[in-house]
Amino acid sequence: RSILAVGGKRDSLGFKTTGATKVISIDDVLGGGIGDNVVILGSNAQAVDTALYLMNQGKKVTLVTPSAKEEFEKGHSVNMKEFVEPTFYANGARLFPNATITGVGDGFVSFTAESGVPYEYACDTVIEALDMLPNTELSEGLDVQVICVGDCALPLNIARSRSEERRV
Image (cartoon, rainbow, N blue to C red; front, side):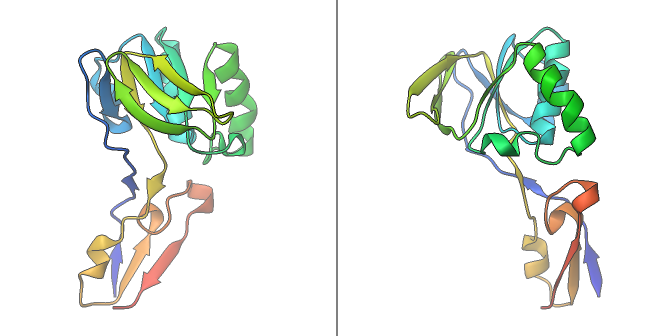
């Protein structure tokens, strides 16, 4: 038996930087170069934590997500949600749930809101922070019994983690 714990992989919509809008992964936020008007694609715990981090730096932050409002902060504990959600809104952040994200233009991100209204939302930085996906491809190419653990098997928070055994 072998254990595979390579972590999950981040979903991406494949958008590229345009002249006035930088597109980065959530993994690159700490590298700097973030503009003042930020749109974060996603609403999971990592996306919300990133929003709070950037708002603390004086950035204007909006979350646009294909997820439902009920999934806001997916991955945070109930105790964290009681603190984070009011802080998010009290600092002027906006949330567009159930949105269909259609593109990144020169100085904006375009999406269709839950109501069906199309938006071109002004921003200078787009951060892709969509939900993590399982990352089991490596186990599929091995000739041994593999147990995928952690986010590799099912990306969740530590309280809800589990393993999945793959017999090959």
